[in-house]
Amino acid sequence: MATHPNLLDADNSVLLVVDIQGRLSAAMPALDLQQMLTHGQRLLQAAELQNVPVLVTEQYPQGLGPTQPEISKYLPGNTRLFNKTGFSCCAADGFTQTLADTGRKQVVLIGQETHVCVLQTALELLSHDYQVHVLTDAVCSRRAEHKDYALQRMQQHGATLSCHESVLFEWLRDAKHNHFKTISAALR
Image (cartoon, rainbow, N blue to C red; front, top):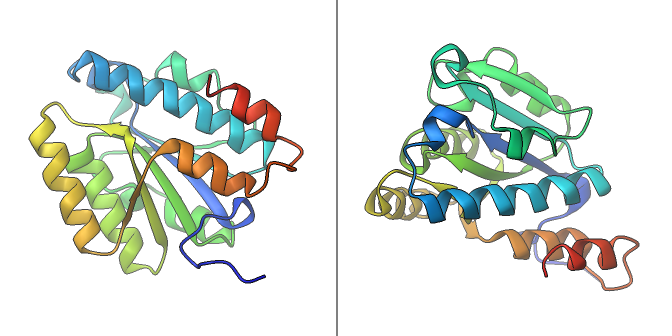
């Protein structure tokens, strides 16, 4: 049976974690930050179980610090890390080639800030013919209206707005999947 082309497929997806670093996170609203971290952990665990490649970026880590421990401890062993000073992840040395080398065309985006690095990355990936899924419950900005405007703009240009649970169940596709019980248990 054919499926809709906008449904995520674990065998065609990449999870991109954008700049979830301590000094940047300290400026985020506490509830939004906790939600992003919790949902990010669930996505990382599912990505590892289903062999979804994970790419991580750090914006100027000398000033903003490394990826937060709440995220870094869940990174699969084969995660690729890219340091950058450009706001789009595509500006990081080797990023676009590494992404292309995966052979996958669906990019699931989480991280911060929604209206800067996530936005610029999403728009560039769309221009390179990637299908971009921005998880509204796993991105944040210092100000709610900045996040809202950025989400609207990304959607206007073709990004799909979604949530982490949709991704998890799209990757599974069926309650008969080997990892269904493990992943659904993490949602309780």
